[in-house]
Structures are given as C-alpha cells and as structure tokens.
Image (tube, rainbow, N blue to C red; front, side, top):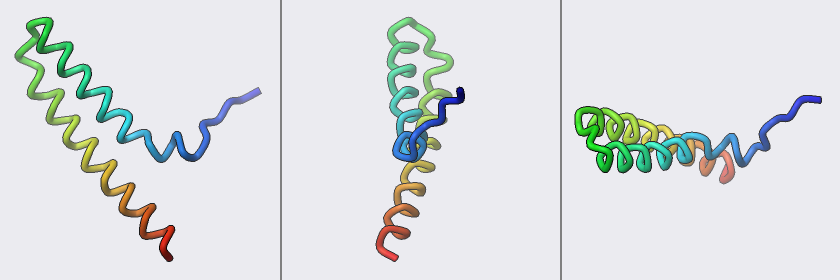
Length: 64
C-alpha cells in the first residue's frame, strides 16, 4: 500500500520548508553556529520566493 500526499500538502511544501528553515536558523544561532546562519536564511528566502511564485500561479489558475 502506497501513501501519497494530498494536493494541499504538496502545494504548501515550499512554504513549509521556508518555515522549517526559519526555525533551523534560530536554532543554529542559539547554538552558536553563526557561520551557517546566513546560509540557512538565504535558502529560506529562496524557498519563500518559490512559495510566493507557486501561490501566484495557483491564484491565477483559480481565477481562470
């Protein structure tokens, strides 16, 4: 038996990853891993851009 992700879950993957990276950046900072915090937050920002683009595409499709 295979388990597949529902559509809403797939649609929110980039946003969920960005949220996770925000948390990871905070944890890294608090743990003293300052050398990687900027890299984590840069990836988070890219994931937020991807999420915003996906949300815009979905809104455009919904209004079509």
